[in-house]
Image 1 (cartoon, rainbow, N blue to C red):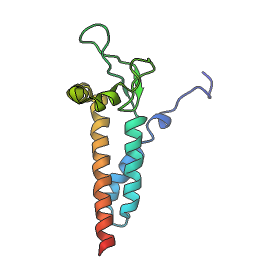
Image 2: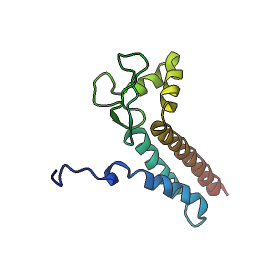
Image 3: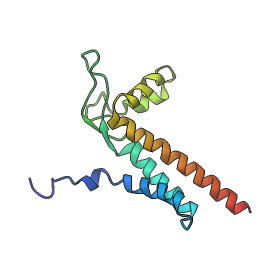
Image 4: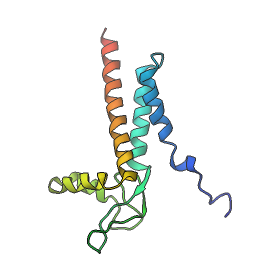
Length: 136
C-alpha cells in the first residue's frame, strides 16, 4: 500500500480533539466562551457529517442492517439508497421513532450521538454565558 492511499486515524477521528477542547473549556476559567462556542460548533459539524459510524440502513433480509461505514451520523454509506437516509427520517414526522432506534441500536453509533448532543449543549450554554457576560 502506498503512502498516498494509506488512511491515518487522524484523518477520520480529528473531531474528538475539538470536542475534548470544548469540554476542557468549561473546566478552565481562562478560556473564553467564544473559544468554547467555536470548538463546540466544529465538533458538532464533525459528528453530524464526518465521524465514521456504521450505516444502519435496513437490508432486504428482515432484522439485518447495513454494516458499511458511513461518514457522519446523518449520512449513509456509499450505496445510493442509503445516502442521507437518516436525514430523511429526521424530516419525516411519522418515522422519527425509527431514527431514534437507529441511533441507539449499537454502541459505535450511540457514542457519537451522545457526543453530538453534548457538543450542541455545550455550544448553547457557552453562547448563553457569552451573551450574559456582554450584557453586564
